[in-house]
Length: 312
Image (cartoon, rainbow, N blue to C red; front, side, top):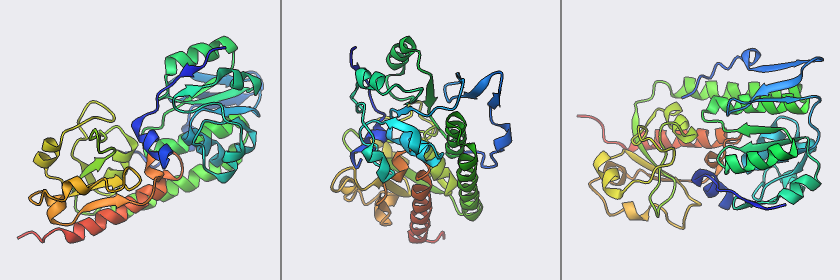
């Protein structure tokens, strides 16, 4: 059987190489159904209904983020195949790999005899789905866009794997942490933010990307939130014209990814010392660890606010 080329979203590639939302998530209203007649059924993030006759106990995960979600849902013991860079939790590194962001090995997937495959929607979805449909293996498409969607994904995966109790407990804890952040930072003065995904080419995120959700949660305003592309390419002139109060990146992007801004002393972010390189890659993956990144982001925004000159 052929190998299928796939392409990773730039945010995931950044995390791999180091690799807002409605918080009151009513779990009882999620689109999940299970009974003796219909089996187990959930609606995935593409809007497709995924139905199993019995809980999935041989699962292949095709992205590092979906591997983390499965372990969070208590289904890690049922994961028989992962993608490259599935490095968390540590147990995931011991599972057979079926490819990476550039190539998925269909022969290896077939040999593992999965009863469920979890696909991150930013791979070449049409090609993967076409091949997997021929195999008759159920596929769940995962693409959480808002922070609250992480909890929904955990519930879905726990339902499909028969680990609903553990999944519900983890999802509830996650929702509680998000709610606590929202309450803590709801009254903070707004701060204008440029989030740098990549330096060359210069890439950022729009308002539909989960990092933008975290920016809003922390009282920030994404200066490029209105752009159409999820991960748009912008030029330096546009950033300077927007004059952000703070520029943020992940410090694993390059050795000194923010050095190019240091000479632009008329820009607020530079003049006020608000060039922030986060030390955590957690914001790069839509998984439970994303909250760690969001919590760090909120702390950095408070520091950036404190460095702004007092209004006259």
